[in-house]
Image (spheres, one colour):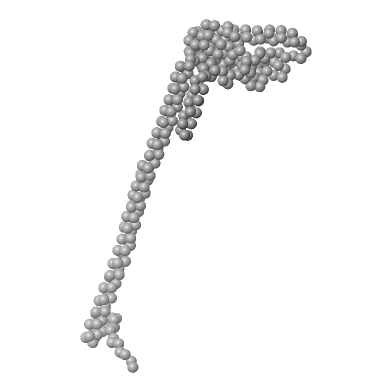
Length: 279
């Protein structure tokens, strides 16, 4: 019964996924589109604020499009020079940093994009985080489309400031799947290579332990051999002296016994006397 229920639940999940189109999946998690984060001065009328916002928005969008066009039309050598120059300026003035990042981002994607075709698309504004907004411009290049994302910050006075500019090439679903597959294979290959290396290192521990054990045994045998030789030397020296002493005493006793039996004794020699029991 449990297996049947599991199969039914899996079938429902599969059918629910197939009912979602690719567009529906892409919409999940997308930020909500907002109006341009422009001026909000309290001392201006609604009409003046709206007019100011429209003018500021037009100027901003015109600047972004012109900047993308000029950057895309640069030769590679000129782009490198501009990056170095902007980096020097960014050391003195932080307002240059977003443009340094923009040039580096374009440099990294330029080979995949090709030549510029059109940069007059609509700019869409979305809220990224609190007081941060994204202005996204879709640009057409020869090889593929690209999204230019400009991050804007809004301070308490409702003044906007460019925080970053990035170029994000758009890939087809097939390219995305292929890239994901390649990344997965590379990741798995790296993991297996590391595991094999670790297993090889662990296997070497046994050999190292055997070598250390053999070295210790060899050293112990050497010490035992040296100790045995020393013991033999020590044992052999006293044995000779003791034998000689015993022989001399035996000779003296025999000589004394002979002298006693003959009735003559040397004053400096041993004298053997009979032991009598006193009652």
